[in-house]
Length: 207
Length: 207
Image (cartoon, rainbow over all chains, first blue to last red):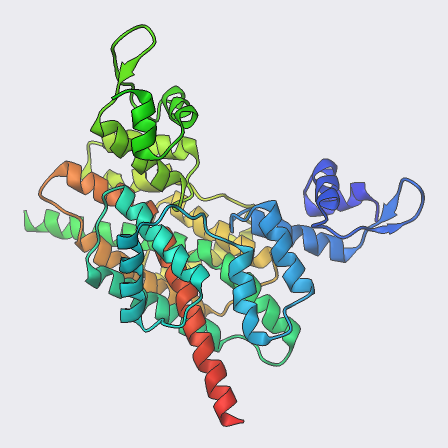
């Protein structure tokens, strides 16, 4: 199909498709003349993936490109996949002082996450620095409850990684890491609403 | 203090401080002459808060401004606070078709989150649309496990909202909603690493 048909089928303007092509995040079509190329179903699917990554998952074009690159050429060792998934969607880092670094290490030790990568330890420390910068303090028991909840989630996720094909495993790990994040955050907000409604209904009933 | 001292104390360049002032996200100093103003500890704290919101929490300047506005002028009804917190940090929305909308409603009904706001239902549907666009499918039981984990988190959080002062409650809800998100996501990745290491160690031991 021509680029205009690809635009219509994928719901993305021709100018955006040309931008994806220039950025190298969308593979070229088969050239049919000096100014035209032929696109197929693989282009439609790739555009949908790009939209998912830069939309709800919130990746930059460059992070989406890195992640898609890992999908196409996965790291040779299976257990390097998680690292590739985490690096493809780096968290914004803030300044971290020694006290915050120590707080992160304390949480990690209590959760049994020793031998973790420096990247993920720094991401936690940076998130804690954000709380500290806003003078927002949480008790150790709250952090431990968060850690337990995330361990439940991650244990289930890792257990479900398909092992029958490397390509299926790669897609599961890379896409599951970033695409599930907005699902969890939306669910936390829905659960907030429910908890808040219940507590206020209880209080109203007591009065 | 003068703007140069504020810059040094907060670790943010003068040009950035001027940008915050122009955007109205940082309150003006007390004018001391036609070209100079006096800044105090409230400016240092506000800059730290702005950095936390646009850094690890990943808000845009305009979302940070809305959230800070709600901190200063909280909604009159206590239970509108969550809505203000959620609206101040909107998720990027993707296109949602009817099947995805139905999937979101199914998850919400099973979790008992009925009577939720349209905003949060749409955020979940949009996150699910991202998974679907990438051809990434999850079983109902995985969604239900996510819902249970987020319910545990949210129940604890709502229970800890301080009720002794409105200002403390406002800060807790508004900042806790957005600043805790990067903490949870970093923890999920740490837990992935741990689960992955354990599973691969088990497999290696079996061989």
